[in-house]
Image (cartoon, rainbow over all chains, first blue to last red):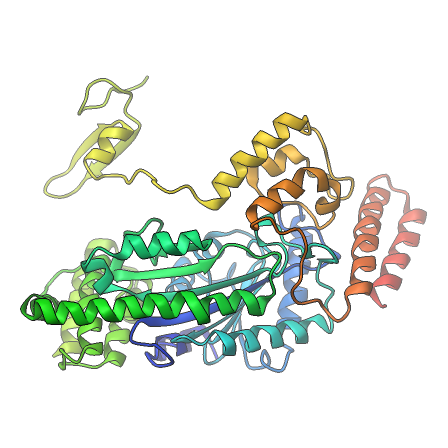
Length: 349
Length: 163
């Protein structure tokens, strides 16, 4: 497998299926780990950093699930390729923008991605379409166990897994669920939901940036506390209480929108389609904003011009790096708007 | 030389923008006016990290632990305050007193890990501190060109690594 092969599909997390997939786009679990015998990256020398990278890259590709993984040395690829990995949710923005020896291993189906030398030496991540936290936990924990056979992770009896930032100490787990909440945004109940989640010490962010102004009505809910609870208990908070509740709110809001003012709802959906179908210049954020009501329309069976898989293809491939990879050349923002509109029109023709 | 904000003509312009649409022009605004014009978004929510950093800073000032340094990685507590990142696993021991209120606060009062434990935990804890210490000794020995000591330490590292 090579890096360019990734673009042939949208990856597992954008398959659009899995439990609660009408609201939950994808779920993700990440574990932070550090090698016990090396300092954290803030004080590691360049040669030590390279040694950590080599060691972890070798181990990550020799576990049962890592054998077929693609190892990407982020120091050796260009910024468009790095941005493409960010758009596919395989690496963080911070990892793409970092410096020095660092990389990622990606499983062929893109459900697992191990970031090496990001903030911690290792971040084991698994992501899937829909609400699948239990399966994800099985995945990441198995990778963790396999790696721990040959590697000694920094661990303290009292504090658990030791991480570069004390906010991740203990389990080192970050659970995050990406939700599509267009109806709650329209009814303006989103702030209330965000507040309730924050009261439970969960972070709520827009997919692109801080605050609750989310482009494309996509929100990420994640835990902030990593110490004093078991991984299973942290996951249970999401699967048993917070996520089903938000999903229920969103579904109710959708129903009430359809009941109260179906014409307004349909107008929003079909107007978005009209714009995408005919625009000659379009930005990435406008595209994301227009795809949102169409995603809603597909799930509410009020839109039938194309299906979820094409929607997700557009969602991924119209982002700046993917667009440039498709056209095979670097494009500035102005050029991208034209190429993006052409790409969408072709797909919808 | 500082430029005054073109909008309010009062504050110092800190935001400099070049518009390309509808025509090319330069604008110089202060932060407040830039926010009013929608050019920049003033951050409403502080990140957990920012809040914690302020907290750590406050705590450290109160306890006078500014020049405290980790004997293994050399990171000072002051450096941790600035960047919010620790230098090595031993910092959790070296700065235990300063870190514990911060950890409690970040984790809803929790002080103990109850989750997953690696199968090799006991060995790990011993190796961890041992290897960190030895690596530092090796580095010091090499720097002072004491190759006899360096060779001995290297052997100890290899011995511990192969366990």
